[in-house]
Image (cartoon, rainbow, N blue to C red; front, side):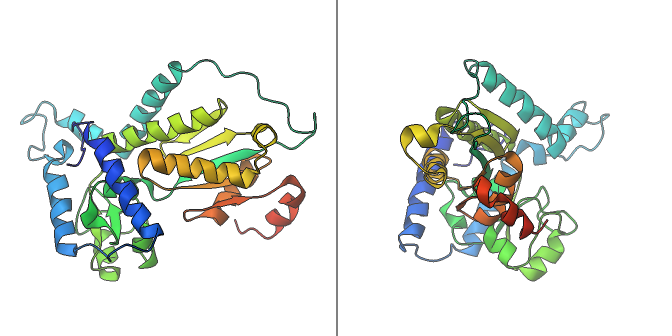
Length: 288
C-alpha cells in the first residue's frame, strides 16, 4: 500500500523493491507499455482519500480547533522547515567529518565535487510501488483539477508541455491522461534520508541543499579507487537507485558551480563531468 502522512513505514521497502523491478524492466526493454489510466486515477483517488491533510471539511478554528495546525502542515514551506530539522537530527547521529582531503597534486590541485539531483523527485516517489502509474504522465499537487498548481512533473508529463507552477486545468488540456497525485511528505522524507545515507557512505563531506539535492566532495576517491569522476558518479547513481528505487542525475566538476551546471547536461537519468581544464569552454557554451 501507499505510505501517506501517518502511514506505515514498513510499506516503503516493498515500494522500493517494486520500483526497482519496474525500472529494470524498462532498462532491458521488457516494459509492457503504459499503465491503465483508469486504474491510475483510482490509485490517485485512493491516495487522496488516505491523506489526512486533505480531510479539510471544517474550515474554521471555531468548528475545528486543530484547523490552523492542519492547514500549515499541508504547506510546502512548512515541510521544508520540518525536513531541515529531520536532516539535522540525521546528521547528529553521524561522527564528525574529518578534514577535507587535499586535492590531487597538492595545493592548487583539482577537487572533484558531485552535484546530486533527484529527477522529478516528488513524482518519482509517488510512483514507488504503484505499477498502475508506470509509463504514464504523473504530477503532484494538492488539487486534482481546476486552478490548483502543479508541483513536480515526471518527464512524460514535461514532454507533453506540463511544467511546475502550471494550472491543472491547462495541464490537462495539454495532457489529458495526466495523473495528479497528492503530496506525501512522509514518503519524501523517508526516501531522502536513504539518499543522504547513501551519500554519507561514499564520503563524509556532504552538503545538503534540500530534500532532493546535495553536493558531495569526493576528492581523493578517484585516486584511491582508480576510478574516474564519471565512474564515481555512475556508482553513486546505481547505489541510490538500488536503495530507493528513484533516479538521480549527477554532475561533477572542480567546484560547486561547475558541478551544478554539469547536472543540467546530465539530466535526465545520467551523469556529466567537467574537468578544470575544460571549465572555461564549458561555461562559455552553457546557457544560464
